[in-house]
View 1 (cartoon, rainbow, N blue to C red):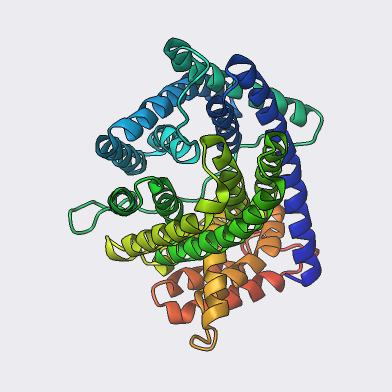
View 2 (cartoon, rainbow, N blue to C red):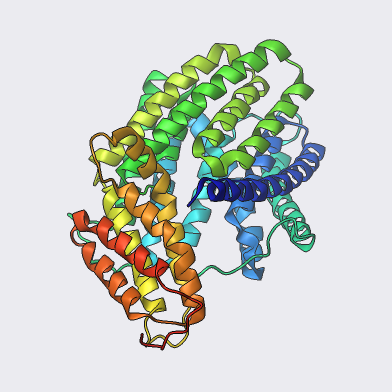
Length: 476
């Protein structure tokens, strides 16, 4: 891919992210206004923004079933957030046990298929909200109203996100929803105590990281434990291997460090002007949503800034806590990395090879003469899965190129270069023998990684050498 193509792709990604960020922020502002009209306290307002962002990113409104699930699940989320938040405040060790168990179950359930994965995401949502929504006791409303407010706020979040996303699609600001074909799944392995499945490993790693984070936080940082737990959770979320966890840890710490400096500069100049602070918080959230596709560090930077500015509503001053918070972020990142590398570690190269294998299997099926309905959807979906792990490998290559003349990131680059010619070939319905042979050789080379790069390069050349303007016989 040329520099101009990279620039065009990056511009398109930013344009889509900008539109999505605007729609999400409009829904958040509408929900925030309603929440503040019901209960003019910071807690419901923060909950409104967090639920809108979570709902917008989850795409639960993909169909009628998703909307119904969201309308039922998010009010429950609001109640659980309130209940577990109070438990963490009044009975910390019990609350920590409930928190660790809830997150473990939500990840462990992924082994039971797509429906269980969806249910696990819904289970995890309230615990994620707890870490990003500080516990602020109610002052202006009764306890009964305070218990009902989270339900109302959750329903408002569902309503406004669905309304603004539907309107944006009608106006072609957002692209229409499309079903995306999943890549060919890997063969299911039998689980044992010595060789647990990936989902079980991830659940155990997360549980250990969270448990250690709570212990360290409660014992040494009694008033600021949440940032240690939040960081350990973030760096282990969506664990795609040890390298992925280490990469996210670096981004988290780097983004938080820059966010801390910016937050100190803002808070020193704006003082305690609530309106200005609210505007800066909303602007930080918007920038984080917009720039997140460019890298997690941007999200970490602006979320750190927003959370730091939010401390003023909880009776704290940012100047007194930001540097200690950065220390706690570093500690949480270290705990997360150690857990991923010590508790049933998952090799990142093994994850990458599995995803490349699935992608090549989809391509092989698409160019197989025996396949009656050939489609590039499986191949494209497989490439998307590979690209999810690409940033960590490319960063590793940049840091270790002098040690490794051939790096796994090279596999990703060559496979990505096959995208356009492969899609064009599949669209013609042709099944040239040279391409089929090259794809088969690449699949066999996965068993011996040192031969994978030459095999992928040979596959790319075979795709590039096909003259699509020249008709071929079906088995040529």
